[in-house]
Length: 119
Figure (cartoon, rainbow, N blue to C red):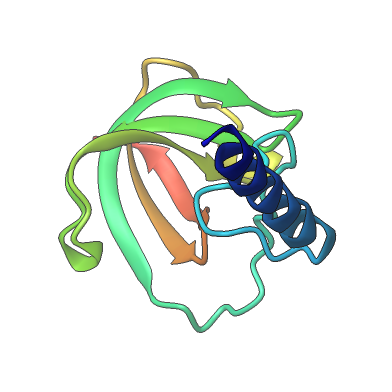
């Protein structure tokens, strides 16, 4: 029994090491210390619109955290998440502002196309 457990663990660790070496880690096991690439590669990706409240702004990283309502076009429920934004898009905005925004959802990235205070 002890030998079988040791062999099983050794095989499992060798598979993890092989996956890490080949950069093909199974979904859900991506190391979180590596930043996700959020570059916009295809401007033809359809945009979605939502409204929300600014919860945080990190101009150094170019991330605005928004608590937004549902996004029916993407079948997203209400949630709080980070969106990539350019510094000039965030000028004049602050935490607590209610905003209307348009964005592209591409791969694992959500990229602000436009954002403004709600009227």
